[in-house]
Image (cartoon, rainbow, N blue to C red; front, side):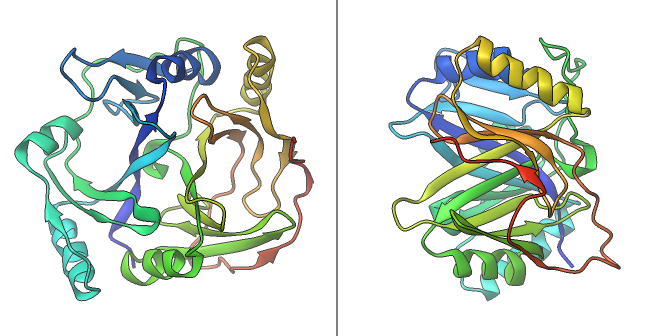
Length: 287
């Protein structure tokens, strides 16, 4: 059983943080807060009562550089640390300054699959002000966390084994598509909070999911891609495995953002992992 509760936050590197911040506000509907002049984090992005779910820093290549997983409490941090060390993973305790930046009580970090700095934290300090989307969007977070993140790596099996055998995630299922085989891993009722797809060309971020509450919100987001000239990665469709009604667009950093609604809830006692070979409809790649 995993001690990890949900996907807490992601740190995004991008060549143009200001452009990504505008995209986050005007297309996704996230609330954007600007960092201090001497702060390496240029923008923090809110989607709920958490102080931020994403942040933006300057980077030559776009992608997720930090993944933060929320655990139950300090004892859970200790439990996970023991398992990581037993797997010969170097674990470092977060400093007071790092914990203050993340607004958490305690945090440890290590290098996870795809070379991503991976953090386990507890005791997050929630924001004093209510979240208000500039576009009136409601996001599905809560106990399910931010959404999900999908990474590309040539070392897929090692990544899956690590998340399943060391961090305790379940393998929800796999999808064997013509453009790649995806492995979906979950830690709560959300179908998956992380997934991996094999890529021999480059290692990095495939996409991040922002789940919204209604199909109408998906449609409005799709309209905003046209309004703001955002390129699509995949057309509107419905996944067979997680039931998500969604589309994919290309963010200013080059990786994808999925906007979806209606994801299935996993019952751990009855769930059966299967392999899917097609979606119910749509999700056609856009060249």
